[in-house]
Amino acid sequence: MATRRIIVGIDGSEGSRRALRWAIGEAERSDALIEAVTVWQSPFAFGGTFGVHVDERNIEEAARKRLAATIADTADDSSAVRIEQVVAEGDPAWVLCHRASGADLLVVGSVGHSPFAGAALGSVSTRCGQCSPCPVVIVPKVGQASPDAAHQ
Image (cartoon, rainbow, N blue to C red; front, side):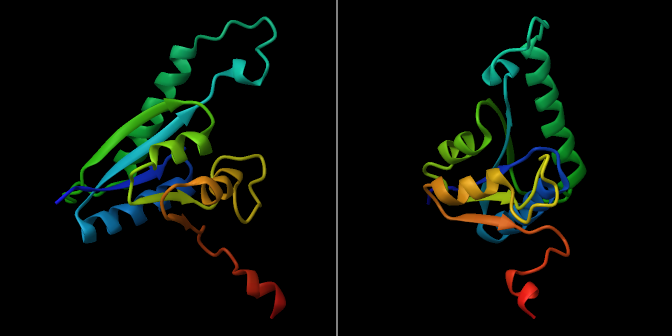
């Protein structure tokens, strides 16, 4: 039988830690492999750095360390779930949806690192819900009100 694959978006935020914890539980129940994916973006993708020298290898290495630290802080050592670490450059939603091709599930937190910390649903999770080729689980933040709460 083919191994099930669960893709999890990791940005180091509490939202991505919740997504990873949820995915680990699902992987334990379904004997799945987890691909923990973190995405870094070049400052040149936004029009340059205005004469400041930026070594992109440092950005990539920081992303790699953040991913490893998030997994180490979140995953239970006693779990038998295999977690593969993937570091990629690009637009986070596009990379996650591309990685999700052929996967069984894509898991993201509802809010990650964003200037809109109060938003109920982050832009990456929203875009993943729209473009993913497989089912998406968006793990809500603790205490997040349901849409119906405003109408009660």
